[in-house]
Length: 467
Figure 1 (cartoon, one colour):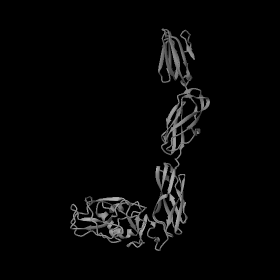
Figure 2: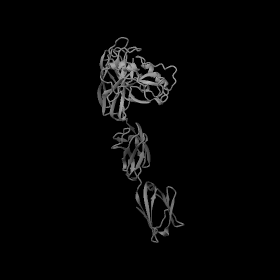
Figure 3: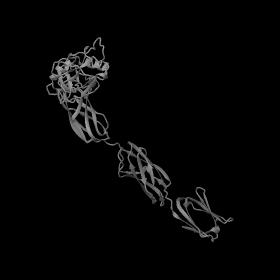
Figure 4: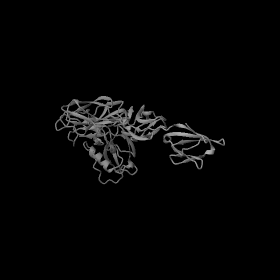
């Protein structure tokens, strides 16, 4: 504390106080009239006395000037504390406690920054947002520097937006430097992996290179983190490799797709041990025996190619198999004849659509290409089991071929025995609101006459594919 009194004889014209610019002071002036003036003073450059005018001046670093007549001053006191400063702030040797991970809130994470040349003065602390990887904030509270060496502790809060480097620019104690910390990638985890309900796309045949074959596995409890993928070789039937590319799990439920390559060494069951996201399960896939020409040996009722085999001598195909989709393909379809454009008369030459076995693919394709909103669209527009060559069967295919399937899947529970077919007919004497054309219905195992479609009718469809 320094006190100046007006009755002291001053021989010093100018006093400089370089330490004042490293201090935060206030001065209290007791005036001769009884008034007291108190004001903060920070960054004093000098105090000097103008003898001719009997005036004391306090000059600040910002060149502001505070002046007092000697006759006014009864007493002046300067008091305060040193403004904290350091000679060096060493960001290169900052130490991180805890870890930072993308998408996860920082918890108990901090860093310490060493400094040298502290003057023991106070500082107001600092709060600084991260750059580079955003979403984080580093805070050190107000306090005092040590005399000499010491360190500052910054607490990190927030959630990093990505992986990479989070940078914090520190500006304290008269020094500036930048600390940088790595933000780690969130490692992917899941709660369950469902091999039992995997969807297999494509067919595996012994001694035939897998082509376009994959399987899809559902999982639950994904945390959104990254995984490195997996490459796993088959056991049981060897020669196959299932590959999952690196990626990220979804948050919550999702699925993983493995591509299968290689050539199965025999018929039987190929097994793949999956180990991903902290979960394991074993997937089993049937490998069919070769019947020559690369065709598998299958029987009616076998599960294969996205469905169930219902014919082994289907015409116009390489292997002669007709596959009907599984039990879940019983969805009712409502066909409103007025919503389609192929059913208004006159019809001078009927479209090339037939009831015959083997004509289902042509029938279904013609309806999709030339008409709007027919039952054929329900089959031709979907991908199921990895295949997109499904079609709506002809009338005779429904009646005879589907009748070969003896697993009591027809009729579906709670629905009519009548099914939409892709067979198209014309009846000049029949008219529904100006429409003479219609799509025929059929019943599996029942050879019957055509059933004329009403203006709006809801019946199930069963999609098939042939190869």
